[in-house]
Image (cartoon, rainbow, N blue to C red; front, side):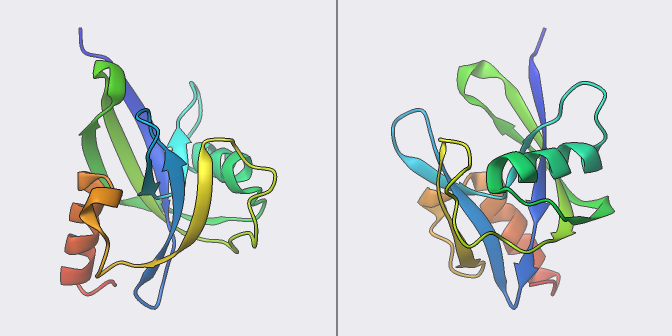
Length: 137
């Protein structure tokens, strides 16, 4: 039986730039991701995203649109299949990440038209390509 990891990710875009976090990956390197993470049993997408943003970034106030803007399937380490649901959000990013999860190395606003493909997951590059083509970016 296949194993799945369901996650929710926050899309925060302003003027063609997206707010991304830099997370460590298993080989010691890092990748840029949309903030968010796994959905716990019994949580709604909205509840999970609010919890993840509080845990990762210390953000307490978040506006979340309930309609997903994208759903992506990707391969996790360990053979699991990841399913990421992307929700449009509005929140004030923190100025620093002093009290966040250890796996997060950094955060910044990144131009979505010039992402370095080796530094973001394939599904995220594809998402932003489509996002720009549809005129949202």
